[in-house]
Length: 157
Image 1 (cartoon, rainbow, N blue to C red):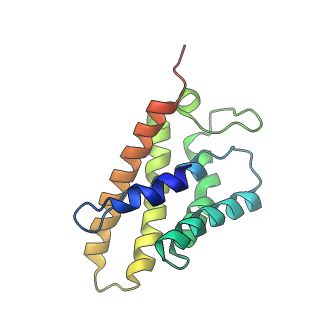
Image 2 (image 1 turned 180 degrees about the vertical axis):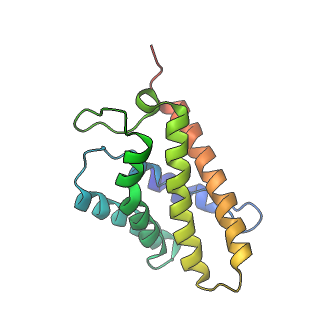
């Protein structure tokens, strides 16, 4: 569903002519914490490649999502080291809290965007322009992902 929303709606939103939110990566962020690392990378590749097919960006999103998934287990250990997850449980706002989830999301979205935009530019001649794109894209995507999580997460009782 996130891929459909990304392709049909969000890819048509261009702020400033070059910035559009990437919320399809929420699928990867919410995969269970005990997922097999190989399966994590395969699902990330399929997710990114699905976006590549619709946006005619050969492998850019696939590379960015795989890079994000590659570092994701280390980020989970960093941000959620004191939290015990049940088998098959994903990180969510109720379990980890808004602050921890926001930091986790911000770092992983930054890694995704850094990989995506520098592969897209494939040059250091526009280094600062690309860096601004990464920062603004990261903030926008993280904000929208957090809004989605707040809207669709079960309430604490």
